[in-house]
Image (tube, rainbow, N blue to C red; front, side, top):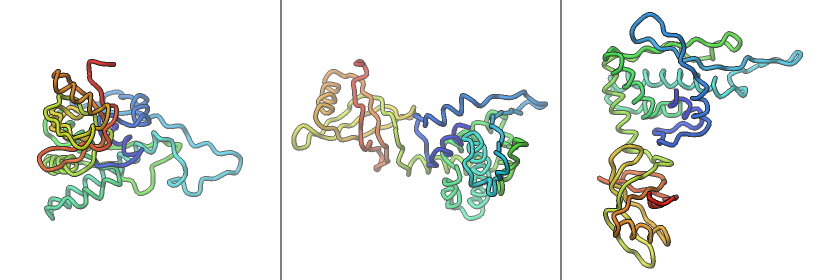
Length: 255
């Protein structure tokens, strides 16, 4: 649900640990429903307000009218799962991830693939089936399938799609935490700084260019072996990663 909410805000191949505020607000409003018969059946309730019309007003094109974010999120999830299923079928026959890559515009992401993989593992590796029931006041959205099933043999394709997305996309708002391992001085008070640590919980070696006071802080962190943190846009370069547009660089022991 969180991956779909993020994609409803703006579709991307990968969403960083810092999620959009609107997506997090939606996640707090969604609820886990009553369990059903079966060991691995879960229900999620996504409240949506009814359609209210004034007088003789009519909604001629309901799918292009403004819709509540909760409705957009669930519709995005249903369409993203359909795009995932279609992309897996295409990858199985062609050996290419092209259709899954195109599915990003419909909500496919590394986060969604990883969430499906987690559900698959948690269910005893039986595959995952999704079904949607739509609010009667709004009805089912047009051209959206209300059921999808990703079988066990789909999972390797989701693993590869997630890996590919994370290696090739720019990760916006990535938070780096670690220790300064190397300093390279350029002209003036600036230079490349190599940080070994984690990015959104993943072990990474990250290079970023710092200037002025930030560069001074990096020198101090290196000399005193102090942990640092900063935020920026992460891109893969060879065997390491580069953090572009670094900001909020600080020593962790300082407020």
